[in-house]
Image (tube, rainbow, N blue to C red; front, side, top):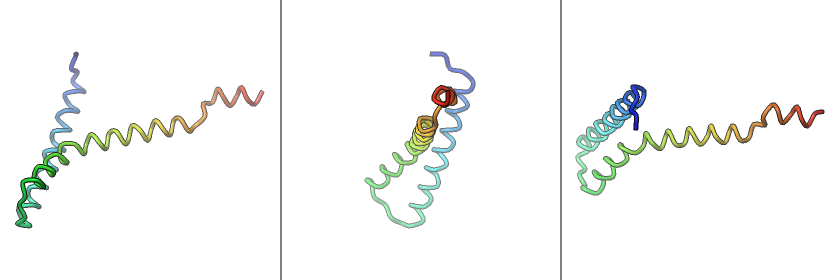
Amino acid sequence: MLITSLTVMMMVLYTLIAGFALFMTYEERSRSGKTSPFYTALSVLACAVWPVTVVVVAITALALQRRATPAPAAEAQTAG
């Protein structure tokens, strides 16, 4: 698989966003004084996965929007 500079840039951006979310979650949990291995693991997982969820939802929304909008060629055929 050919890794392009865009792919590397996206991977770095993803890592920075997930790392920031993880840091903020850690700070919030340490300030609250609540510690739980289950919720700590769940927090780490959520911080690592949420950027993927945002991308999937955005792509799905765009695909649904394109599907709902009729193509200009189809409108021209029905008008004539």
